[in-house]
Length: 222
Image 1 (cartoon, rainbow, N blue to C red):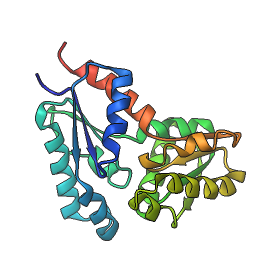
Image 2: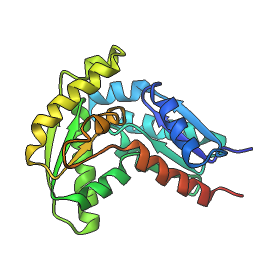
Image 3: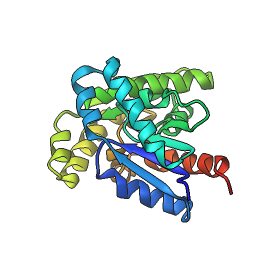
């Protein structure tokens, strides 16, 4: 039996998260996960316009689709734009996990605070938000927040400290925002920590997975 849906991750820690989200939406859906951590590491060094990086992201997306998946989702925001443009013909649909989040953000309010623990994620996410706003015919004012001291905690496996560091910085910066965009999938738990903030704090895994599952079910043979 062929896979219906596949994910390209840049960290192993994301596999159980997205497996669980798929099961919550469609328990019987066949899913494939491919982890290529070096793609994020290289993107942080070369930038996302590097031709070799683009070629390798495209190759990884095709690798993820090798089980027959009709939908392949990149869960890394830094390389998401590259992944979304992967040439696939009619073989599969290439998606980025954060597009559904961006579409909701621009409809929530014009002052969009984009927060990230990796500086390399900020420019791609800002471009995504501006693209979503243009598609919706809405004017937005994106602001960027780079929480530089958070990522070392993630790399060390200190996830509680990672979320705590992000939440503190975002809480201080969100005073003049209408909505907060958590630019990396790993930041999703911050939304619960900031539930009392009084504005929407949006993360990508839940809406992105729901959209991907719906599309995979529509495109896969019954």
